Length: 78
Length: 192
Image (cartoon, rainbow over all chains, first blue to last red; front, side, top):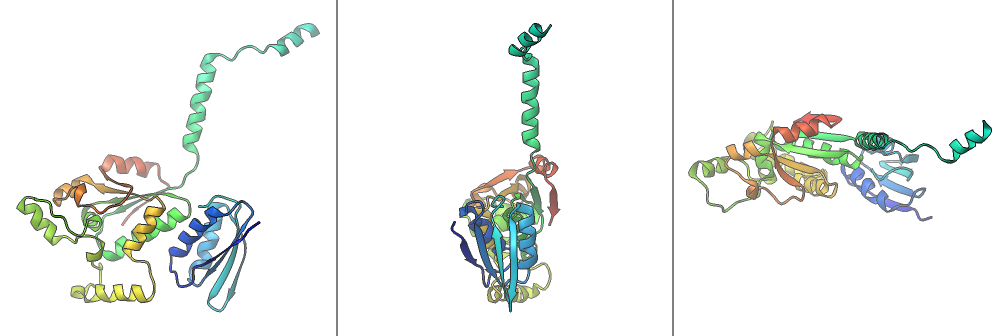
């Protein structure tokens, strides 16, 4: 099972969501996309994105300005 | 008695053709009802900030899996224009064209334009803050298969045709009927 890391540092709304949407397409069901972001809206946005697309937000952590979200692909790409 | 039942089990009565037809009809109706979140945005304003908001919502909702259609009408129409068009046109059309912004780069802020100073300042700030600009948003929209419709009547009023519009894969002219059909099937309709 291959996981993927996506860096969206410096990107502003709505680009991180666009990148997540694009990058999760390449994953198989059950695989994890790890997203690094520093857009302050990212936390709420990615929660909404996961809810809307049926993917699982495994965890989200914040160190300083940088948030790391781990998303398990369980739904559609969005 | 038992014997009779078994015979009935072995050869069930044929389903009437009428029923089959109706089941087929219902199945196709169900297919149509499958929830696809559709979003419909009317871009009436040609102000930089408002078109930015419209495209931001469009690309954001498309990233969330929504099917998005944008309707550019009235002052929003010239936002989708090409930079310049060399077509021969009547004088009135050329005059109108000269007064309207030609494309995304020429749009002004709805407030704080300040004779161009405010808009230029905002654009610079957007660059330093790495906010996504109109052209990049349109590129994203293209990738997300956001459909863009341009109001036929607005184009006519402003002396434009589809030849004056920028290159975009899902760009089509439309009327109020097209818009209403989309709006009635959309979960969200916005007027910006």
